[in-house]
Image (cartoon, one colour):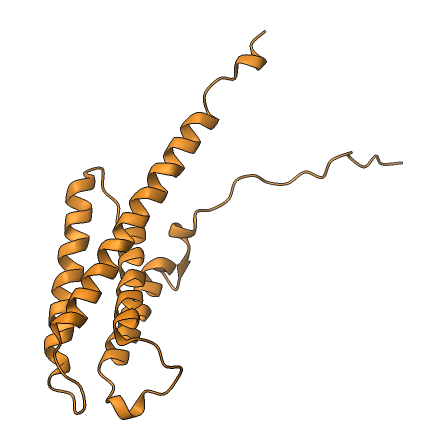
Length: 153
């Protein structure tokens, strides 16, 4: 007769989401590319094509670039944090400027500095949120690995 363990066992080793691949491409990178294409298409559709709930144009720009910023933060790695997040900001701001400029060539769209500022605000908000969550995570894992006083012999 076999015995059943009192507690089910499970493999506690999990592969990080950042290392998952689809056809040899990291899932996070594929997600970033798809999201970036969606932003480009969405910002270059003529106004009469866009239907949906009445949401502020600036809120849409802020949200789109916040998502882009979070994905850029997620896929990049470097021990030099200032350089890493400066590059993310530079890439995001350059794309926001190019995106706003190129909208001037689309019928029914215009180049708007306020849209660029909403893009930049979303990007910087995403970087700030990522840095705060990163700090909380590392502080939490550091305290979880400290020896507990009540467990000392």
